[in-house]
Length: 504
Image (cartoon, rainbow, N blue to C red; front, side):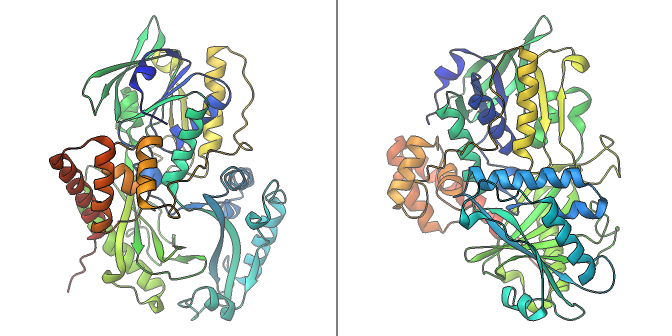
């Protein structure tokens, strides 16, 4: 997979996809799999923003039971199974545990009923899955069983726990890259570090996008019969008009440098609506183990133009305090936090029912022919990583209909993605870096160490320097350029690792 701007600009595509996060990558893969001529551009690196900075859980939608939203729950179950089926080396089963307590909705009888209904609604959850990816039935656990999974389990006031299985994405950035690779292997033209400037149109119909090559500095005209803007929190700005000012929520997770449990654990926070205006109080925070680390999340706040550094600092302190209040036995303090991840999520803001400052729950997919008078232009703002494949199917169905062409139906729920994983830790550093540069479109050191060969966690300075030497040799960097790349990566690492400064 090479960054080939001549090919990108040298032909007319059926669809130009703007944005290389999980939604844009899935759209490009789906469209290419159906035989469309596809172009995909991303202004930074693929999966370099919110899509890669998540708790890594692919949810089956158990929480929808409380609202009676059974259709949405079934959709989540189907999408969880699809991810397990098409990317088995990158998506794996994940046990999830929450405490049972009292006589209400978290009581043992209530949770037993919820788990039984969950099993009934997900009878087909293991269809097409290998033996090591099959999800067992949910069950109630005693306090002792909970403590074996989570030694710091808050036993006081609880009657045990409820256990079910969702799925975990081991490396979100590599899953996104697998979708991009899959699209390219089926004929798509893709390039990172290409920024869209505007959609071009003539006579009320899309003609493509005018873009800028952020590495070479020159203009790039990408011609296409349809354009899909899937740029996450920047979608509204690129679309323009009334959609340019949609408010966003800031979402923050912390990374702890030790493994706290053998299951993901959800703990309810006692905060009310004043302390937690986005969720409205009483939300669950989760700890999610992976290898020798644990992800903690999530803390939310309205963005409202606030400084990102200030939000990171405030959220880090607040989130750590919430975990300590919910589970004091874990004995977490600021020294345990080795990093953080953050991103931006859309708010309802009048686009769907409910509080305007609550998190959006449904993706916003729009065709702009009627509203803006530009035929062949579409935009999508996704809300859940779990739903990205299904959203992509909907978007490509709309594109195909608008183009008036006959193609195969969507096959992404069953077609394996390209999981070529030379970048995995089993290979030597030299082999991984060379593969990232030659075959995975890594053009900056941050691409290599943060998204191709790493796990999304801060690497050591020695590893960064070693990777820089190999990358520089591959790309012909001068010594000053190599040093500048190292300094840029280390600056990012410092920002994400020195985040919690608790008051004395």
